Amino acid sequence: MKPLLLPCSLLIFLLPVIIYVECVPDSHSASKQEHVHFDTGGLSRDSFPKGFVFGTSTAAYQVEGMARKEGRGPCMWDIFTKIPGFIADNSSGDVAVDQYNRYEHDVDIMQKLNFDAYRFSISWSRIFPNGAGEVNWKGVAYYHRLINYLHLKGITPYACLVHQDLPYELHKKYKGYLDRQIVKDYAHFADFCFKTFGDKVKNWFTFNEPRNTAVLGYDDGSFPPARCSKPYGDCSEGNSSTEPYIVTHNIILSHATAVQIYRQKYLATQKGRIGIILDFNWYEPLTDSVADNLAAQRARDFNVGWYLHPIVYGEYPKSMQENVGDRLPKFTELEVKMVKGSMDMVGINQYTGYYVKDDQKVPAVKSFQKDWKAEIVYERHKIPIGNLVSEIRQTLTGFTLLPGQCTK
Ligand SMILES: *[C@@H]1O[C@H](CO)[C@@H](O)[C@H](O)[C@H]1NC(C)=O
Ligand SMILES: *[C@@H]1O[C@H](CO)[C@@H](O)[C@H](O)[C@H]1NC(C)=O
Image 1 (cartoon, rainbow, N blue to C red):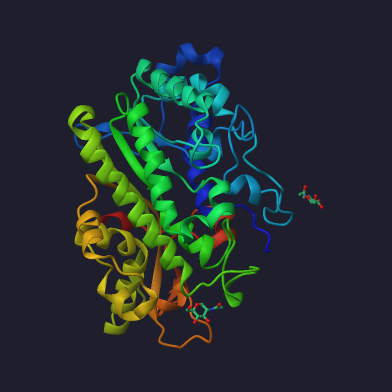
Image 2: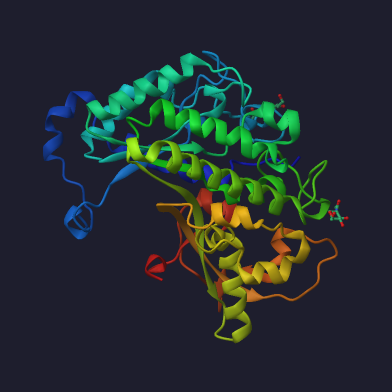
């Protein structure tokens, strides 16, 4: 398998943590903290609408540590970070920033920095070490401690149920997201979390960036479970032309089932809201030709539209139906009813922008990334789409910041 420096979206999700750790004055200067002046370039809370929520966000596997302790079962990353060559520097989330033990300190920092909210994820395999069945009550107690402490410090908890950390046992048992059984096991986990934490958590997300699970896990194989067709990555098995679509289909059904459970069993008493978090890059046509404009729209459809369109309209985007054909699974009439409208809110993780040009070449081997019939381009007339953000990200993906992209 090909060595990775670090999975890019995981790296980026580390940033909020890194930023707040770096901004905090040492404890002996804490009394002076109110007088610290940050140059925000004129930007302040007043620049945002009243009630705008500022928060930080993390993934369980990236921050908790205690990976194989206090009864937690392995998730996919626990197994894959140990495969020689999968992670270039052999690092793993075994200890991470040890939030499992140091959550009070972390939450104190959030409070000092005047944050309103903390979006954390719940490690499925810490609650159900085998993905289903027996409950690990020590894990349950940890989330109670964390949530109680957030409330004590006036920080609103936002809980995400799955952040790229499927219990490994479910992969071993039936290949995880490739099997429809995942919908049942996920629903059971979600139901347990609503029942157990829902009196104290009013903002729920079902999945974080499921597109990355489907594409990086099953189209190019750079994330666990490292499945793909040969030309697209160094994978021992997989099928890039079908599996990303099956995985997403089962994730959407899992999401919608959980939302249905929340609304039917818990909403009346708990009065919370529920949604999903999607990652998105802006796709800008390279030229103003019709072909490039259509290519850019396909790129948007195949990324954020893949999830958002079914959740809003009950079916995949038309451009996906046309280009993927019968490799794209279909929702039954009953499933359409459940999927359509299955969110109260949506989270968008915005990373960067790319130019896109039309590319109608027929690939020798079909894959998700070739189905868009679009090529990603980083420069126009030798000018990058935006300033490169950092050396690390440049090495990884050619990440750039596109000025004004958020307003599009
Ligand atoms: C990672 O582990 C492999 C195998 O144990 C070892 O050969 C390699 O030197 C390690 N790399 C680093 C950066 O520690
Ligand atoms: C992937 O699955 C499709 C549809 O079942 C099949 O036609 C194709 O040969 C498979 N490709 C690989 C690389 O296994």
